[in-house]
Image (cartoon, rainbow, N blue to C red; front, top):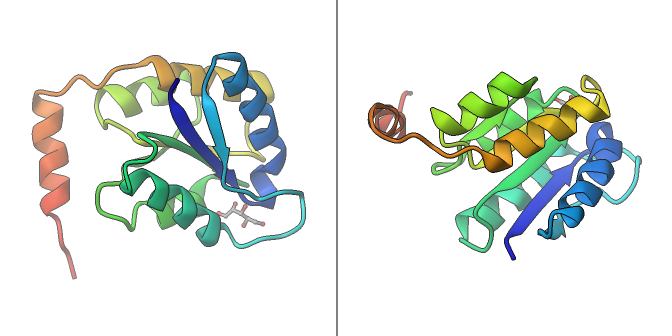
Length: 147
Ligand code: RB5
């Protein structure tokens, strides 16, 4: 059974709860990194929890949700080895796996309807990385160290 970690701030709390129940239907072991309610929290703290779990190797992939998905993307992508991709629809979910080898799916909880968000998640979970020229480009990204 694959272990997957999911976290959100208050802006993504409701969608997190919906996606958690979907994941359980599909036999994932789900780790909930918070937040535990709609009360206001700081998204970088939750983002870091999810990132650390992935970088430790304990989970291969994770899901982060905030109001727009933008804050969580900025925070998670500060960490080397993290490819957090903000997806809005089926195609961005598919390409984020095929081309970007996304290891964190980021969603905007205040922007997406439930059906669309579930489709994005299922697509992201079930799409393989294509490697080849895309791996060369990801290696280049890993070499980037701009001031
Ligand atoms: C919280 O109000 C909101 O700023 C946050 O959820 C997120 O959208 C930040 O990018």
